[in-house]
Image (cartoon, rainbow, N blue to C red):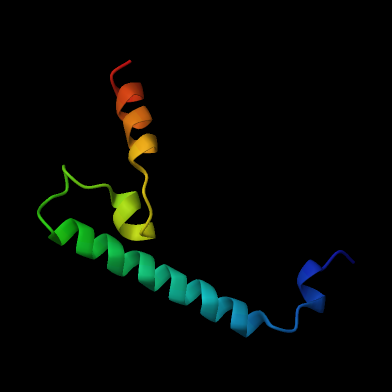
Length: 65
């Protein structure tokens, strides 16, 4: 009786949006890995096209604890 998907009429559109996002993420990850600069660039920054320098610094500090 609690079928939450029952009232969703745009399932195919949602699936298409997630499939497109997944493909873009895969393509960006492949591009990042093929750059040869894996150590010097952030996969987050390359994939999501945003600045994650602060997050990367915190992550690196946590790795040395």
